[in-house]
Image (cartoon, rainbow, N blue to C red; front, side, top):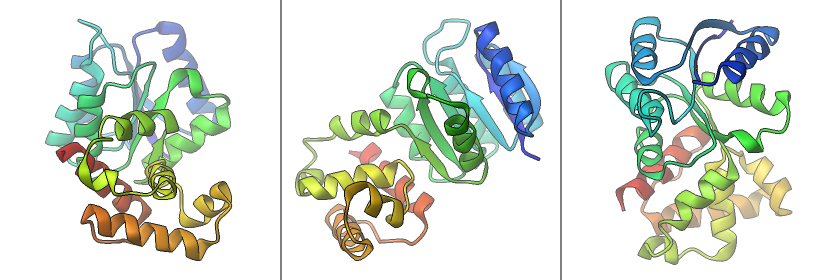
Length: 216
């Protein structure tokens, strides 16, 4: 049974997340509303996964992401699922480029049902990734002038974005109407152009790509 820590300043949403997660078999070890409380909970409770809002008290800027980063520095690999209305690119890149543990970033207004959200929580708790396509698009767009990325074909960019969402080659094949062998070839080409070694580990390859983007 996965132990979850929730960091959300809005009472109704925080309470709703508690009940939703409990209804799906999770144990909520804490539900906090500020950055300092989140950091303390991450370090002391070491949850299996944390659902974290970006903007928390006291300043409502980026306390959630900063606390998540600080927590992962003290306890490497803590799985974090960011649930926010905003894409904070700087800290999101730093979090995603960490390269260890499960990571996710969902936008609140694009979570359309409980199954989608619960699947994301479970995936991150298991060490995988759960990325909203809009988040990935913004992270990739801000690096559009990077020479290696400019070398990618439009189809390779589509494959890279799908990879960053945490999709397997089979899932990419279905989404883009390509054969799995074609997806494998595009993947090999992407890693070659970006100077990254191919990997069969979906989570590791996504984090490697994001780490590269973060370094540009």
